[in-house]
Image: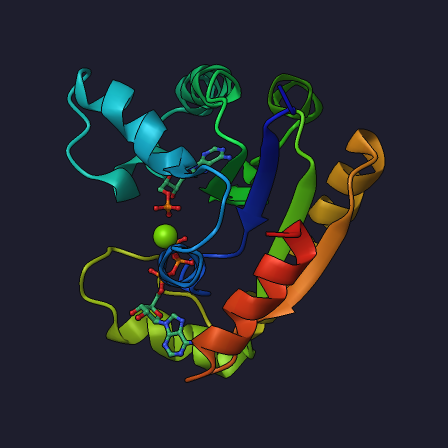
Length: 192
Ligand code: ATP
Ligand code: AMP
Ligand code: MG
């Protein structure tokens, strides 16, 4: 049996990862491979709910030690999924009071063994507006200058992930109103 491909999709909050991944699923209905979409935060939240966490946006406010436990547990669960392609919706880092905490520290990379990294980007103003408009989530309100800084941190963190795992890193622009173009680029990068 061919090995399961683990495609890790990262991006800062509001860049459009989840929307983009939903689009990919729509576009690849007629493929001949089994594709499973997973959301790292959802897997963490399912466990956290049992301990009284009410909202996925509360996860990043938990003590760092708790977030790290949930993170390792989610990675272990993900590593057991054996569809041909497993798409993992997650973050290069999480903003915490302690600083930028890696979403994919080395020990997590060793558990998941990603085959591809997709780093989703967009114009800072577009990300700012998407965060402001989206009422389904409680996103941290930060300035456009801070969003620019976050995109730089994302790029640095993802370069480290790519070097450590020896897997390719593709940067994709999710421009306003151009979801299909961004989804196509991802599909090409993962060879679906
Ligand atoms: P989080 O990390 O917080 O889960 P996310 O990266 O998954 O965020 P989404 O929830 O997918 O972000 O998208 C945020 C908002 O941006 C949504 O309201 C979505 O409809 C909108 N959006 C995403 N991509 C585009 C696009 N290409 N053009 C216009 N709007 C978009
Ligand atoms: P999301 O819906 O992608 O924003 O995920 C919800 C929450 O899950 C995030 O705000 C983080 O607190 C947490 N999360 C997602 N991916 C990771 C990760 N790789 N490491 C640590 N926490 C994560
Ligand atoms: Mg999302």
